Length: 141
Image (tube, rainbow, N blue to C red; front, side):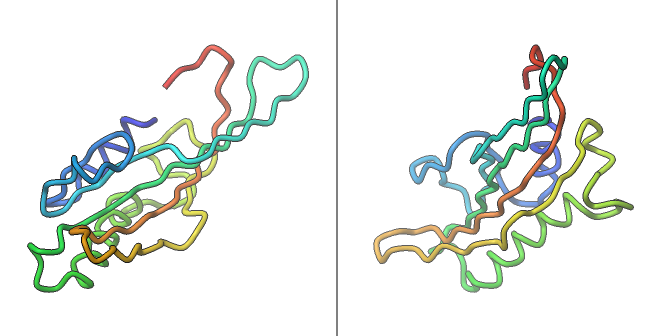
């Protein structure tokens, strides 16, 4: 599932995609995307082989501010490109066909834009995704 999301994020032109937590030191490219875990909750019914898992992931998108003459537009367009990679051509955005074992795939919060401090060189946007699946106890990502 994580690899399928990363494959979709790799469809965004000009952005370097990384799995793992956002790190200021690693974000050297003009535009970049990090996929990081945020929250996981499970509902476990009694004596069942599986359970319902609600996993929330954060997509942290960023641009290098000194390299951009239009940072506001560049960051908004990067977010739009991410959404296009996820949802374009899907009949049901809650159950995309590229994520077959998923009950529900959605943005649970509005995208947040993080204002950089005076000494920082990156503008960031955070998209929170919620993914509901029903793995068995032996499943691993």
